[in-house]
Length: 417
Image 1 (cartoon, rainbow, N blue to C red):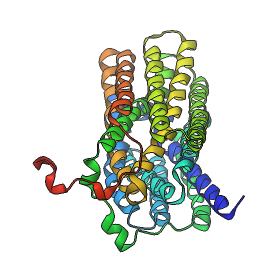
Image 2: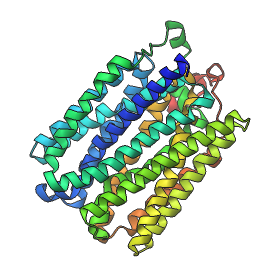
Image 3: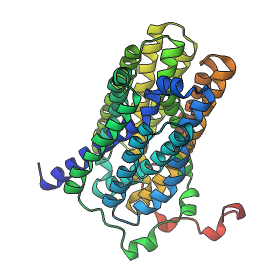
Image 4: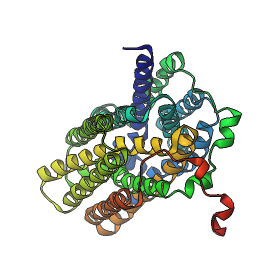
């Protein structure tokens, strides 16, 4: 293995391990949901709002983090965000009131907002187009295994030691990750003054049809993901009467499948591109098919009353989401290119994570009013199908945008100037 490949491997595994920790910290509230709700006497709507608090700051700060990722060394940007979200996790385990826990979730969202803009800047800078599917797949596997480990081990630990020690322990363990990051991660310098002049503005990115398609696709995919992310433990325990251990195993297996399918189809796409298949065809087709599989699977989960079918099609939904995830981000990095990868990803992730503000509350409201999950899950499936359509019909091409050919901002409609 060459020195360059060794350095690339180190980058990939550092990023994958960071997102592994990220998603355990992000989902600890969902894992501990039945216990937190019981201790604080939360209604479904209150729990949904508590879950949404994270996504408010996570989405809003994407715009800031995306701009910063293109303008400073992301090694230090990411280290600061990582430390902030780890400390917020510990804080959540120490507070005793609803308002304080709400504030901890807001801080957690702000810290975690640095992740994906930083990933895109690093991968677009250090990897070529035919190399990006695999690192994105490994990062996707990291987030899935983080969810799987959180649900499997976290679900069992919370039931045995309590949710507060679980949160505090996560904080301590997470902070240890910063040591190898600071020692091993190479610098990714800010753009030069000349590069900065060529960087597109937010309005130039927004004007691109490809941006609108990828952002809509991510919003719809995230609606599916965050519906399960925030409500799957409560759904399995309350609606399907699973024990905490059964919930942990089901959720864990689902996200292991997400990880495996992400790596498999990320590698498949890279190999097909190297073999000469067009990038637009492979990235678009895989992304659209993945979301279609997830939508159909969730529709079955919404209507079936058979526990075995519920488990089987939850796993099918995870399979589809893994197929989508690695190729979606690889396409985004290709479209934006090194000059705009941070800002494009921040803006796209802002749009995508509006779903995180909407989905948890929407599910809570529907469950409170209907007493069941059928309508909430059917709505999520329909939105996911819209995402598949966005990748099929709105995203026309997956090639690096020539920013010199971007429309003159003076020609934008008045409402966008």
